[in-house]
Image: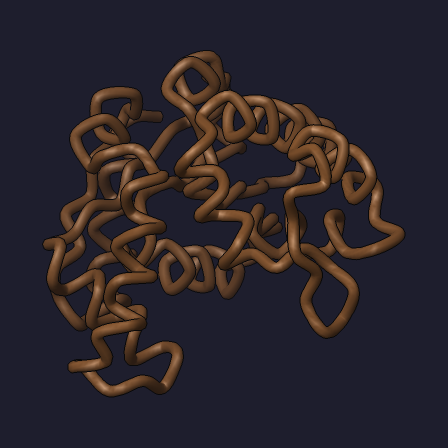
Length: 199
């Protein structure tokens, strides 16, 4: 297990991004898989043509010429074979990217993973979990949407359906962090203590 590498994972709204920012503030290099995936699947990106081929052109483009992720995620839910092939491509590329950091401390943040890929990852693996309703409200707040926006809530739940369950994330990781509170710094300090205990 590589202790200078952390694989931070968990479902949408679990608080991964806030925690990874604390790591960045402490000098860790942070690679966000969602950002990388978006850039690599824009028109001209390294995975754009591959994803068009995998999805048999059943994709929509957004106003910037990239994959319309809301449509693509829905398509993934319906087509698990597509999802698994995409996750495999993305995982291999992210691992090569992490290797570029050499001996420096680096963290990979992603919810985009399957159990077999998560199990084979050589990093210290941390699953961030939180209450279902808390996760939904965090996503709504982050997007500046009202807490009662039913269309948005349905869309968030659809994303949750495509991700591993919180139990599945936790079962494949060395550390499970319950992150239901609002004090992200306290959660980070607790996580750091658990990481130090695994050293």
